[in-house]
Length: 86
Image (cartoon, rainbow, N blue to C red; front, side):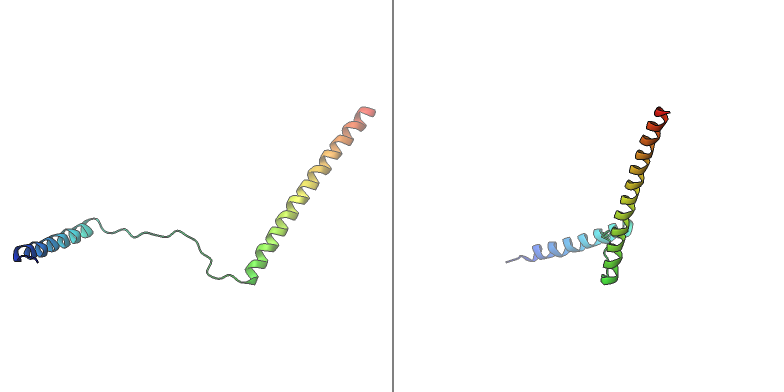
């Protein structure tokens, strides 16, 4: 059982605590946690198809760039061989 003094102390403690918290909140303020997760709200077949098409185009562009590099290398090799034959 609580004595009347302990109840009075509890009330005073809660009052003091609430007053200090309120003063701190006014002086400093509260900072809310922000979630920086980017979420796509809408996902449908159109978006899926766009991503798949982009992947295919990207791979094709890299392949064509590789072919261009190989062709240049072969051309340079053939050119140097013909120059030395002359």
